[in-house]
Length: 198
Length: 95
Length: 104
Image (tube, rainbow over all chains, first blue to last red; front, side):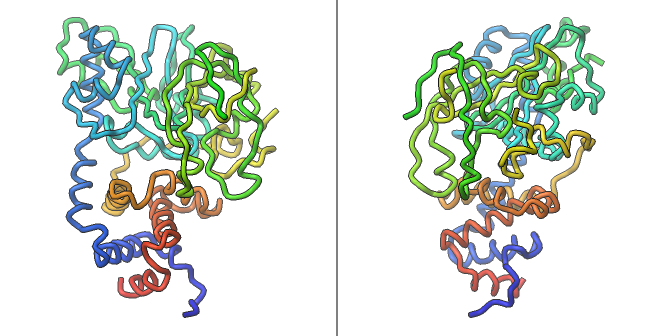
């Protein structure tokens, strides 16, 4: 049957989604229950998970070592289900080294640990600027690194997913893990911001 | 045949543009083609995404984390700053 | 010297591309819509069932012409790639899709 010339894949996104879902359901390929279950699982992952890992690494040197050696095992040990997710690489910040994570080719992000990537991470501006002007980019968040700190930008191009283990900020002596985790934000684990005790 | 590199090995990313020859799915960023860096570590073996993307049989390839000096890539930026990128062994040659 | 503009780079290969170097980043929080969540879940489910890989998703997104690539939202790009891939692999036919669109 000759078409009218309109390519069906160019239909508006919501209509296309509904049409594809109805076809897949009619064919017994994907059910609404499966989609709903997957949404629930995906929604359950939030930056608070990664924050727990960071806080534990700040107080527990053995856990820090595990995190740096095998990020996925460290996530599981913190009660974060990895369900066979891709390898997790943890990038340790030091007094002279700051990491920034990007995926210039698409949006690879440590979703199992941090949840959905934020909109800014997926933007053309972030993907273009991170590898060429990382200091100017993190200044968009008001972040300025101390003198003598170098930046290492990690471009996620393959199967590893990367998160940053930021340095424990000053003014947090004696804090327990829960209090420490509360100051670790999504951006701290990507490298656009630095955690602070305030 | 992908070469094997030890940590510290100086490498060059091949200056090749498969995307200029037809439909391709390449995970080696354009800004690294032809650039020289240093292998940091071997990350393991993974199926070649260039073939997976086209539902073709995909061989296992070694994957390396490779470090590049920022100013060498962009002729700008602060000296000491670095880029570190996962590159498949098939894209690397000894420098 | 590989300046981004000189090379045969694909348009999705955005590292350091000059025309975006002065573009500001919207650092604000933006909640995902129901559409976003459903497309994401659909992609994951198709992956789990071995119907479509994330590599095929990426290739389909990269095939979107440049102007459209930047005009569409992130998950609109995914949806177009999913539909194109399912058609190409024969999971559904163009006629079936057109008919389903007419019903929606």
